[in-house]
Amino acid sequence: MDAKRFRWYDEITHSVVRNAFSQASDANVGGRDGYYAGAAIDEGVNTVLTIDDDFERFDAFDTEGILSSEQFRELNQYLGA
Image (tube, rainbow, N blue to C red; front, side, top):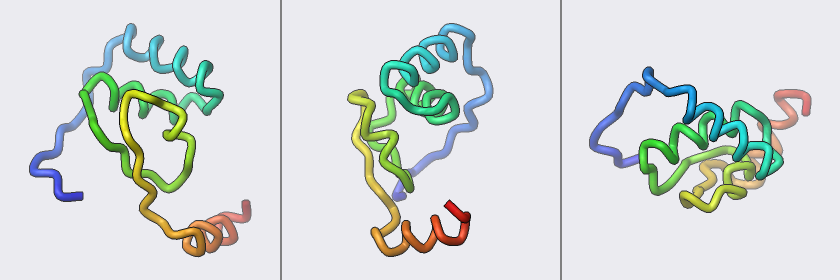
């Protein structure tokens, strides 16, 4: 959250996408999470801030949850999950 820069990631290659979906399959997560993880890995991200635990299945970076357990329950109730 104290990042000094932001980078728009608009040039993802087919090989990065294929690798991301392969990693998503290996980690047993959805394609969208795999895509985001693939982009993070390609960019050399050290830590991913997240609201769920799917990204914990990737060894290439650390994860940090940004919601408390109570906040996560409240979000799920709001989303009807």
